[in-house]
Length: 349
Image: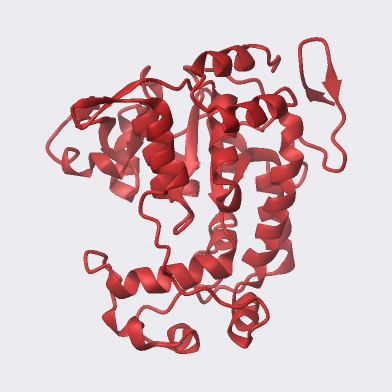
């Protein structure tokens, strides 16, 4: 039975949410991250956005920081971290962030030593290093609340190849990718892509030479089922709205580049138009030989993605009162007061 409207409960149609018997009790991700059905503890537990490459992260994070005025710990603190001894919140332009880089091992260690998760104004943390954050940043007293956006692995890989062919500022920039086929890219000796990177990170098998086994997929699915609030690139607006309502984040009227911008326009810029979106990237035909080859190359991640799609629909039962709210707000997104009222009707206790 799941928490629902005050005085009501809801039966999930298929999955059983809650504590897992498959995950070791001493696993940091299990110990230091709350289950989806655990009561929210604002000001104690800190949401963690697991950044999966080429999965609308720029748009999602921009929306949360700019349109909702949330304070984040991410890569943005990299320029301030080396020369400062204490953690503090920095206001720069239209965003607020902590002076620590949680995308590096040294930054994560600093965040652990200086008690990042105890900062009262911190709203969420962003990093691709999920396991390291679970092991070093979070504790049983200050747990993480995991949320992420998922995209089909084949689409992510095609997008990443085109990105690395032109992104000269990236360490893995390779202009030769422009003229490479996908087959040549996979077989190249110059920074070839890793297969199944999402599954590998969840089960801590991030070295390419370590083979994945069927049990790894079982564990990865179990982590998503019990720990992760799932969003999808193909349903980006609804996904981010779920995050917003689940964590109780309110929309705000913002000043953007020195002038006041209505919330609706800010949302349109990030979630509809899409910051950093490449509308011209090559799209493969689903039945093409290349598509089928990539399905095999990422067979674990493909299976995990399809499971994430199922979870996305199932997780509406985590907050049944949001269905009407989402339909209403997607048609009239600017009513922040309604969002607040919808949030306050939830019973997670």
